[in-house]
Length: 338
Image 1 (cartoon, helix red, strand yellow):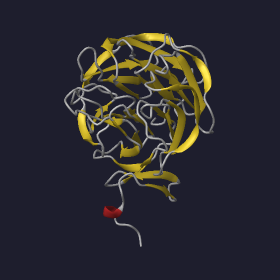
Image 2 (cartoon, rainbow, N blue to C red):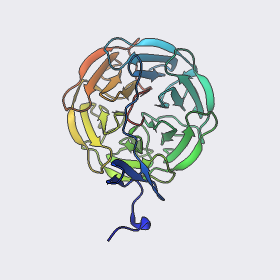
Image 3 (cartoon, rainbow, N blue to C red):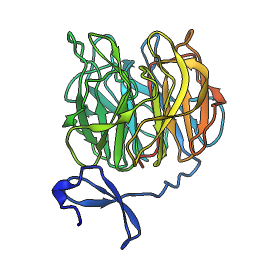
Image 4 (cartoon, one colour):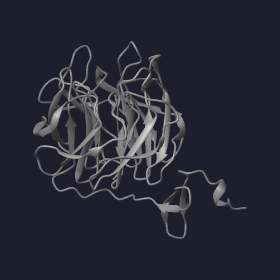
C-alpha cells in the first residue's frame, strides 16, 4: 500500500521511475533534485572571509581546482571575526561576527570579480561564534545557530535569505539543539548542521541535524558524529559532506569524517588533516575537492590543505594563506548545494 502524504517525512528522497529523476519531499509535494555540476570558467573559486587573532576585514581567494597560494580579493565593510558565510554560483555572503560589538549585518561580493563587499541586509538577531554554520543552495541561504552575547545566549535560530536579491533575513525555524561554533554544508535539497557546543555549560556536541532548504520549519535528527567536536569546518559536493578538524575540548584533532547527505546515519572516518587544528579560517569545496585553510594549533598557521571528496584518505598540501589566521568563514561558487 502506498504512503499517504501525511506519512511521508519532510526530506525523504525517492527515485521516480517515470521521470528517471531523484526527488525530495518538501512537506506538500515531491520536488526534483538538481544533480548537474556548474560549468565554471576558470575553475571553482573559494573565498576566505575575516580572521583572528585580531579582527580583520580581509577577503582572500583560491582556485580550488588548482593548487597555490591565496590572493587578496578585497575587504569587508568592517573589521570582524566569528561570522558565517555561504554562496550561490555568483555571490558570496558573509553575516554576523564581532568587533568590538556583536553585529547582525550581512554583506556580499560577486565571486567572479574582485573588490570590496556591499551591504546586503540584516539577520534577525545579532550573533557571533557561528563557526562554519552558513549553508545554501543556488537560491536560498541559511544562517544557523551562534551566540548573541547574552547570558547563556547560544541560539537555535535559523534565518534565511534569497541570495539573488538584497534585504533582511527571515525566520526559517529552529535547530533541534542550541548550537555555536559548529559546522555545516549542503546538497541542493538538504542542509546539515553538526558538532559545536552549547553555553553556559560549554558542552561539546556530536549530533547531526538536517533541514530541507526549499521549505521552512525546524531541523530534524540525522545521526551522530564519530567524534564530538567544536570549532571544525564543513564542506561538501552534492553527494558527500565532510567535517574536518576541530577540538574535542581540550584536545585538537586531525580527524576528517564524512556523511552521505541524501541518507541519514552516523559519520564515518575519512582520513586525517596534515595539521592538528581548530578554529580554521574556513573551508570550501568544488564538485571534486574540499579545502580547509588556517587554524589555531599550537598557534595560528597559514597552510591550506585539500582532499578528494569521492575517495577516502589524508589531506594534501595546497598552498598558503596571505598570513597565519583562523576563526573566519569560507565559501565557494562550486559547492555541493549548487
